[in-house]
Image 1: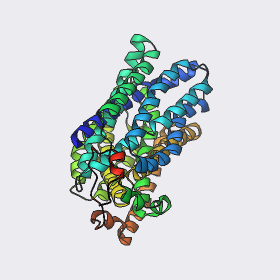
Image 2: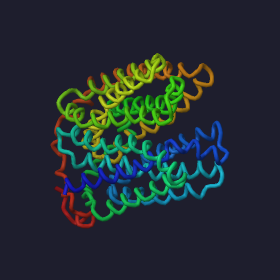
Image 3: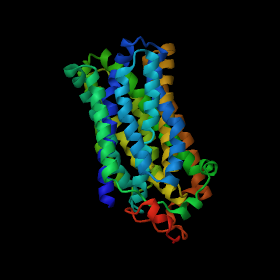
Image 4: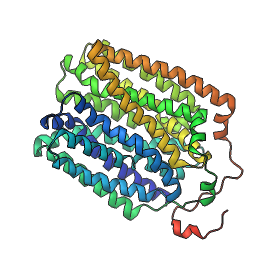
Amino acid sequence: MHRRAYIVLFIAVLASTMGIGFIGPLLPLYGRDLGAAGLQIGMIFSGFSMARLVLTPFIGRLSDKRGRKIFLALGLAIVSLFSLAYLRVETAGQLILVRVLHGAAAGLVIPIAQAYIGEISPKGREGSYMGTFTVSLFLAFGIGPLLGGPLADRFGMSAPFIVMGSLSATAFLLVLLFLPELGIHKERWKKRVPVGVLLAEPVVIALLIFRSLVSFGRGIVIPFLPFVAESRGASLSMIGVLIATNILLAGLLQIPFGRLADRVSKPLLMGLGIVASAAVIFAIPYCTTIGSLFILQAATGVAGALGFPAGLAMATQCGRRFNGMGTMMAIYNTGMSIGLILGPLGGGLVEGMFGLDNVFRGGSLVVAAGFVAFVVVMRRARVTGSLALLEEPADDDPEPEPIDRTPAELAGRPAS
């Protein structure tokens, strides 16, 4: 049952996220054709993350109480519908609205899927399980942009949106028909840690800082690297390959780095990942050739992959320890939304005032300053025992319910 659930979730997340990757590079052009410019172009991208930022924490908490499958299936169904809604918009404002609603629906997919995987991952192997599962995200984000442009060139601008809807609809049916529901353990829900208390835990704060910094760096590189590459003589196709090199390499490295996260210090890997990200972002303006940019993007992929499975593994430990896997994954993904909002907006502001090169220099300094904050908070987590608590088995931690039991079947079962 666990293996089937893992395979279903991997394919579903890969399919739905690849669809989002199809349209990413095309949205600025699509918005421009509808009259969008300046701030409206920014809102097309940031609106997606803003909606996810607002909705995800509530859905994550509800999934701890009501179950995962219903929210995951609902999110995939809505995403498939809004994929077609893109084709009905007539103004830039309508496009922003559809994008916001699309982001809200997408907030029901990845965090809930991660919470599901966190529930079934064995203790001590969280890094391996989460690292392997995260390959689905990186493959989707890497392959999607490579296919979206050719689809639009060959069949028209509507083709990527139709394919995105078809992929999400397929993922919805896959989840609906083949994903077993996790059992809801009432005793665990009764022992849940309040969200306010959870957010005050140093280890949770450190996780938020880490996830925000990783996403901030991505939010700096992805929108502004094409301008650097273009100035070095890269074609549009070469720019796509350049970005895909970063993402796909990071995806392939999730598996070995996930296994590494089960064997060595997770905070160490996360800290090294932050430092490496700051270094490669800072070096971007100093790459004078396309070849050097490719080498740097490969290094960026390694830096991005280094701490990612460790962060997810630690988030899984927090979700298990504090009796709220969905809540914890929602908090962790809130950091992603924060970074993806602040990165592009801050980078755009700096570019307009100080020039393109300073976008990367400034972004690198922000990530470096965040590393200092990460070290301070993680040290506090170690001193207060918050970090050590994750490694200790809880004496009163109930046995996980069988994955093939429904909430209705479990309702009449006495607490273990």
